[in-house]
Amino acid sequence: MAAAARRLLLLLAVSLAALAAARAHNITDILDGYSEYSLYNNYLSQTKVCDEINGRSTVTCLVLTNGAMSSLVANLSLADVKNALRLLTLLDYYDPKKLHSLHGGSELTTTLYQTTGDASGDMGHVNITNLRGGKVGFASAEPGSKFQATYTKSVKEEPYNLSVLEVSDPITFPGLFTSPSAASTNLTALLEKAGCKRFARLIVSSGVVKTYQAAMDKGLTLFAPTDDAFQAKGLPDLGKLTSADLVALLEYHALPQYAPKASLKTMKGGIPTLASTGKGKYDLSVVAKGDDVSMDTGMDKSRVASTVLDDTPVTVHTVDSVLLPPELFGGAPSPAPGASVDAPASAPAPETSSAPAPSPKTDKTKPKHKSPAHSPPAPPADTPDTAPAESPDGDEEADKADNKNGATAVGMGIAAMVASVALVGATLL
Ligand SMILES: *[C@@H]1O[C@H](CO)[C@@H](O)[C@H](O)[C@H]1NC(C)=O
Ligand SMILES: *[C@@H]1O[C@H](CO)[C@@H](O)[C@H](O)[C@H]1NC(C)=O
Ligand SMILES: *[C@@H]1O[C@H](CO)[C@@H](O)[C@H](O)[C@H]1NC(C)=O
Ligand SMILES: *[C@@H]1O[C@H](CO)[C@@H](O)[C@H](O)[C@H]1NC(C)=O
Ligand SMILES: *[C@@H]1O[C@H](CO)[C@@H](O)[C@H](O)[C@H]1NC(C)=O
Image (cartoon, rainbow, N blue to C red):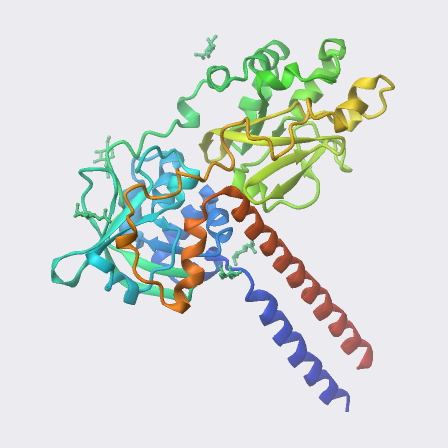
């Protein structure tokens, strides 16, 4: 009796777990099963491009064998490797059948490099062409690019969400490998150029820039408030802080780990900052909606506006408001911090369209030369795969992410159910 109940419960638990697992892909986990792509997989993790891939519901990864990968990375900074990996990630579903039957023999597609990298113009679009002899080639849509990358074999197909295809070579074009690297970057000069002069001055005058530099080897994520953020109405007078508190405030604007935007989105709970003293003090948390990511101090939220440096393990983001830790500003009786919680002037809502980076997926994500004639008539089964790359604006993207959060919530609910079923099982025995 007990054994039968146990078997039944086990079966139930296993099928529920399988259901939950089916709701999200994990590219790291998938490639773990293929030692010939271990270098590629390793770089996906180091650069956190894996988080960008897992955040997409429709994606094709063009993977390189260890041989091709090691010659690609030989002389590159991780910032450049990251962009190369993004250019190999197509935001559409391609299986061998679709590759070999392109309407008109070629098609343009969008890549992660176009939506998240340093692309301008058509750089982040990839032209897939049926070459002579039955080969399928991939090249940047930049004029003059060569079809050096050709399809070799299919590794994994999960219609119509995730496809993993092996290609012979990386996709490159002149100018791809020119990302600013942390090693050769002057942090204060970079911040000044990014419109964060006030913040740059403060970190130099307080000496906190040295703390940042010391953390750069092991991992550093900087949230630099823009000069506008320091003009915000209701911002407490920072000149009145003791120098110890000013240091704490500035250290609060940095995480001792590498967290590009796509990875911030996946972070749950309190995230320690350089100011953290344990027990959750001076921690930050993340609020994400679609492509919008905000840092939450517990008093206020500040939107992550743009990424001005991304070279593993260092990334620098600009933020729309100064991050005010409740440990310094929570108890103040002055109207300032309290008011700043709701005052729109001090905390631009994620919806405001003034800042440059996060959601302009409008024309940037869409291949400019793509004419309707090149789009194959979508068979019914293909419908889901074309939608994401084509979505005309950020809202749809946000809705989709909401759906995904919903799915995750469902998944977690299922996980909780599995846990309680297992518990009941244990008590039965
Ligand atoms: C994906 O899989 C890897 C390896 O199995 C694991 O370490 C990682 O935590 C997983 N990521 C997510 C988001 O579940
Ligand atoms: C697969 O794609 C569909 C449609 O875009 C989406 O609803 C679903 O969540 C995706 N599944 C995964 C595992 O991402
Ligand atoms: C890397 O740089 C070294 C020295 O600068 C050079 O000899 C080598 O050919 C380069 N390797 C590649 C793959 O470009
Ligand atoms: C792809 O490139 C080939 C060769 O340069 C060109 O003939 C073709 O028109 C391009 N396809 C698209 C869809 O732009
Ligand atoms: C970095 O830039 C700042 C201002 O842009 C300059 O004052 C400083 O000397 C530079 N530091 C180094 C090490 O070049």
